[in-house]
Length: 427
Image (cartoon, rainbow, N blue to C red; front, top):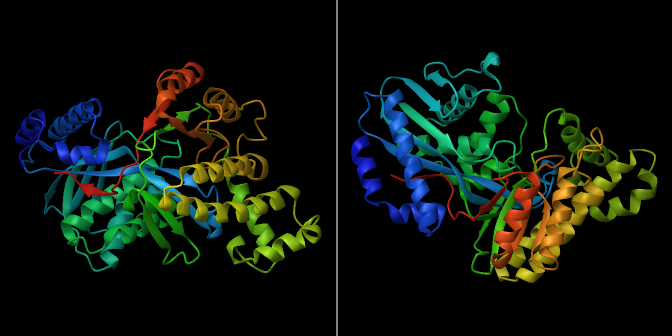
């Protein structure tokens, strides 16, 4: 479709059903999305003026619900796709190159005749693009070229997985256009992880990509990392009377690498005492029986973090079951137990290297003052700095947002909804 024609159709409120699926039925949410799409199309025209047949794709961010720091130990996790997303305006061609302009960044250009790993590209968007194409090529897919302009409102560094949304977006574009959708949601997630691990140079797990690609509430068992068990669950928190809120506490993630690395390293140190690589391979009963003998072999925090893993792994399974049964009170009971375990056993609310920077504990304390006995709140994502997550009663949401914004600045608190689909072609 020609750019001007698509802009006119968006102005005329066409594609309303497609947008409702992604952003909800409220016109207050749909109007800014139409304007966002129109702006992206116009920016596409500025960068690629010769292209006159465009398509639009979208991939969501995600929010972890249960299973805090379990995936890297091959455990179970529960997460959900959200209505913040990465969007691409795309024109396909046969130039043998991918040109991608992301809002606020420089142009990424990948020659499709060279799909080797480039060490100098690691840590860049170019590396992700090249890695995803390379993985499809290894699957026997002949990937053609395209030009794209991308925008994203998935908060970077917030635990909402902006990088996984970008990877899912690219994988979805290629799978739909050049592979007749044969890869599918789970394989697209694996392709994104491959690109991130091998080409980008980051040793991430598969949780983020899987949830962004599958959409909705997703339970994942990583016991077999090559073939994880994936279950999609449907539960409407809005209909149940709650909003999902994410608050950015504005804490810096700089100099926190040691904190993040220590979590899986300490868990693995406990597993090693049993001759295993990951805690999921350790018999839970044997672990608890062996705690006295572990004391002195590994540090105390490692033992506490292992206790967290076994409890959290079981809770993720039970939380998914509670949602499947529509038992929201049981879900909130488990959710609060998870929050306490992250705080007391996993200990990822703040960095011990920055003991006075406690934005997350402060946000949790104020949240509980506002919520009282209603709803629930916990640290979000990897922790140590960044965001908290809360399920807030609808009638308390306005007050909650006001209190969080007063604490951390206007626009710090985001009211989100669960997005039922993952990567998708919108137009």
